[in-house]
Structure formats: C-alpha cells, structure tokens
Length: 134
Image 1 (cartoon, rainbow, N blue to C red):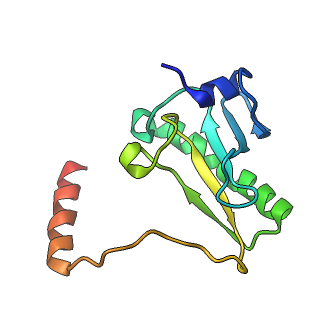
Image 2 (image 1 turned 90 degrees about the horizontal axis):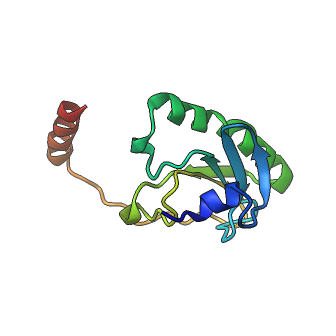
C-alpha cells in the first residue's frame, strides 16, 4: 500500500523535517491550519492508533511536549491544539498514525466543529456500555 508519509520518511518525497530520531519524525504540514502546523509520527507504518501497542503510543505522545515547545517558541504562538484522528470519518486524510500540533494565536481565534449537548440519561447509558467494553 502506498503511503505518502512513508515516502516522506524514506526521502522519496520532500518533507520539511523539524525533528528526527530512530523511531519518530516530525515535519511541517504541507497544508497547515496555521503557521507552524506540524505532524509527529512513528517511522513504522500504522494506520490507526488502535493498531499500535500501548508502549508505542506512549512513545509517540512522549515526543509531543518537546516539539510543541519548540514550535510555540519559534512561532510566538499563544497556545497550541493537539489532535490525532483515526479513520476517514474522523478526517484522517493520510492513513499513517500522526499527531497534529497546531499553533494557536489569540488575535486569530480558533474554530471548533459544532457540538451537541447530550442528556444525562443517554450519557449514563452510553458510559456504562463503554465501561463494559473496556
């Protein structure tokens, strides 16, 4: 299966790398939401975070604070958003696990998707069902 992120990691396609180690890389997003928007990902190909072991997920997320601090310092951002999408319905465009670090600026604002307010009874039932699956 062809993966553009694997191609970038292997040097077959251009990427603007900001971090590299033996198991992970980070590079600027080609289509940024804001200035400095970057992606952190494992060198090893996994489509979704649920395909990874807990240790590998922890290792991936352990890279985020150091990289985010550097992005915030460089861009003079006021804050950052961190997202990680899994599957097409979640807006995962490239099927290779990656964490978005998106700098946020007070003077620009942040747009979030529409939210629904659930009722307590429905939330209680849903929570019970999820607990049983865990």
